[in-house]
Length: 146
Image 1 (cartoon, rainbow, N blue to C red):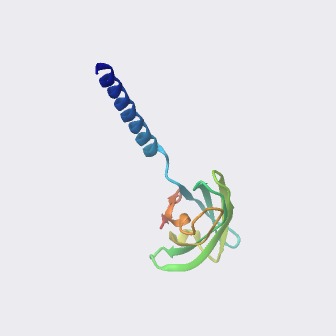
Image 2: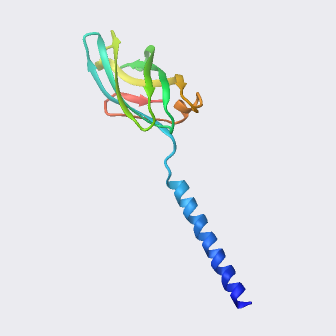
Image 3: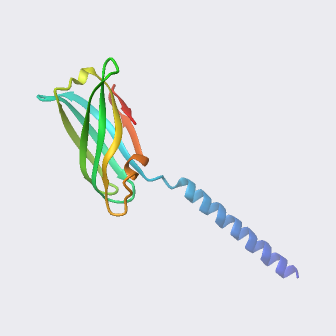
């Protein structure tokens, strides 16, 4: 009987340790994300050039990713809506993309808002994954987010 009790205790503690380790691993695994950083805003010949750094950590290749953005002027009014097409974004890859916004004045931009993902396509990727996993940041004085 003592042997059975000792075996049961060993089995119970091994099972408890396995559960604790699985729980810790699940908590430390990063959530799938699409990181989009507004890295720079510089005057260009056409108007304002926005530079973005994007990293696809969704766990799947995107054959196409595009976002509708709203540009706000210094008074907080919407200046325009436009679509930025980031094209293909391979899983685990960081990419730099530049967009020239004709007629825009970088000095008068106060905010860039992501309205929606107009394209989010890839093998095994839900169309809503680009917005659900979107993480935004900025290295500029321009507010950037959803």
